Amino acid sequence: MGHVYATVQIQSSTGEGLTEAILSELEKFKIPVGDMRGQGYDNGSNMKGKHQGVQKRILDLNSRAFYIPCSAHTLNLVVNDAAMSCRDAATFFSIVQKIYVFLSGSTVRWNVLKKHIGRLTLKPLSDTRWSSRIDAIRPFRFQVGEIFDALSEISRENSHTAMARSDAESLSRELNNFKFLCLIVLWYNILNRINFVSKLLQSRIMYLPDVIDILESTTTFLKNYRSDKGFEDLLVEAKDLLLEMEIDPVFPPIVRQIKKKRMFCYEAPDDPICDPAKIFKIECFYSILDVCSNSLDERFEQIKHHSKHFQFLYTIQKLKDVPREAVMEYCTDLQMINQEMLIWMEHNFVRNLQYWLLS
Picture 1 (cartoon, rainbow, N blue to C red):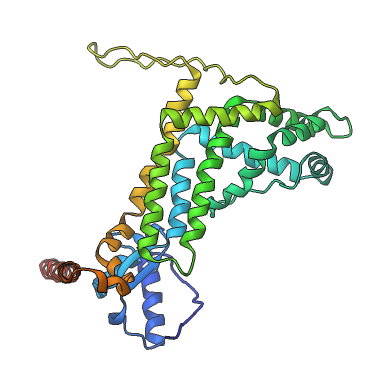
Picture 2: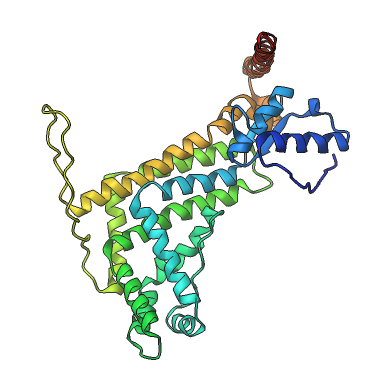
């Protein structure tokens, strides 16, 4: 079977505009849209939208063109969701990027870094390939002491401008913080796992049942990590980094919290948490892992639904060892799904026709 590749100039990025462009290309290559059996796009709302997205518009034309989102892009969105889940997470990535921008913004400062750091060097964060952020976090995970020493040297040396010395001192204080070290360990562990999964999902020999197994194992990893033991393990790893930084394993003191005004007299007063470690555990550690795990389930719901009905076809060579009754059950289930899609399409067409006649 041949492949057709085409670069198309897009006039409109809306679901309607992109659909028209796709249909126009199919017509140009004389490929009937009725022969389509699958659609694969990223998770942009204009592509995946249930009402106005490209996948929905093409499903209206061909109910058998099942939509499957790009798994690698979906993982990027999962990490993005987690990174935006709390202020500490967003602040962490902001500091990592500021350190890279500061040190790479001058040849002199970069040479200072190279003098201290080993084989791993700093890299910028990617706004689109979130799973690749592991490359930006890895140097901090294994050489945070060296990065701190480079910033400290710049802050002390009069050969640098006053502004550079001030910025270096400010950034070194951000590094010299137990909470920041915990976030380095936490994000390294999450991104290392996500990056491994992302590379597997992009393999050409990866089959759908394998994808589902990998996603489920990743969800299990995240849920197991979100535990008292997982938090204790995080603290142990972060304390190992303290040997390079020479600071105490203590979370920063809590900024005085504003009490929430009670709207009704029967409301009980808030009982604030005073332990900084417990606040970090609940509001940051749990929050990041919860969002990451829930986003993984939600964003891959479509591919799991597809796998439920189609995965036996991906291992069709093994069907000879499957009982005949089970094979018939698989086939009946798949037939029902196709029929349900056709019935839904017919109902949707009639409803739109009635609306048009009455308007």
